[in-house]
Image 1: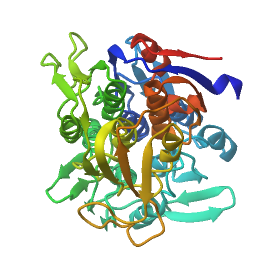
Image 2: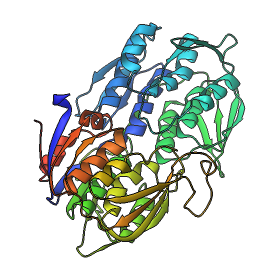
Image 3: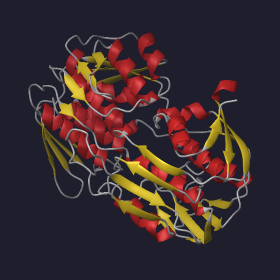
Length: 451
């Protein structure tokens, strides 16, 4: 569509300062958590992104009153009048997001019924909901499949259980947390995800009155309580967006200060960034989590000049190298001397975006083999999940079509780094996870425009 195109005049280093707000992968889950309380909740630093609007719409059709607070980015969520929504109402809002499945536990507790439509989200692999459904059944949910989706009920209520995930899935861990906190008895989850956004969600639930213990070796224990109240919470900053801008600074040979970025949740990325040859400086004035905004620090990223160095890396669950970091960073790796190797172990179809980079002059070959230190669950299957990037490559402009959120930002970085004028189609998909990115690009000196 003509209004979904961004014209990018590349070849100009990005310089300047931008700010990241609350993590997309926490904010939407904290909004769902408000369903569990019997008092209003207040969430600060909420980014203006499409995924937030989707959750806000889904909460609205279920009777949760969501209003803007006095502070920019503040939401007040009042669950006093939770009600059952029609299938059509849910489908109107759910088509572009996978978040509806996380409504199941809270709605079963509040209403005794939940509905899951066909799920959307980015096309980076099947991302089956089997783990979610299996966990909900362990809690006592009854799942009825219909042509339009799945209807869930809990005739005998939800009770605590012992459950081990086959893989430390972030979404399934969130499902268990949001369901277990009001379930009768104790739940023990093994092989849980422990990403910073998971820990922050646990902080939200604890503020509401939940009893949750994070043990060693990926074990989380949840003691069900009879009621939960509201919360007041300022989420951790978005480490994915921060890393994306860092990669943009490196790929365009520029310098970007990312206010709000926190070192503690980006340590693995920062190590790789420095190994490649990028430089960064952590500002020491960042206020503690949960404090009011004031003088704000962050991290300044820049290309120091000279050649970048090739690296070998594998994506993994936390504390490994985050899968959402690899796509923006691969663009920078096209400018590194030598052969870089990227082994994607989280999503089996997340390297498709490299075809577009090759049309721009990059030299990237994808393989079915595990090109990392350890075999992964995709190794003996027909998925091209490893990439070898030969560089440096001179990128040139091209017409690009965005396939998914993170690949979309990678295409945008490539267009900014390339010589000439590119047209990036489907650019509105970037609004799912990057707040006001066009204004931020302008603030950094990028030459972009809508046709």
